[in-house]
Image (cartoon, rainbow, N blue to C red):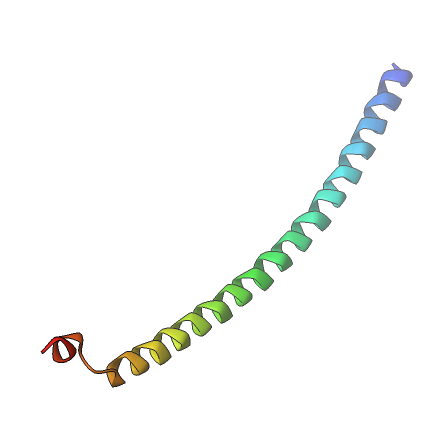
Length: 69
């Protein structure tokens, strides 16, 4: 009975250690996700800014219809 209890205690210790490792990895992954979300938002803002600039340039160009006349 005692060897079985010791084996069970060892497995519980391993499980506790694995749980701690996974919690650490989970925290790291959450931080990475937060960083990537922020980077994604910054890139989206840059895309909107670039789109606005291109739209402004296109508005200044003469129409193609006027060129064909």
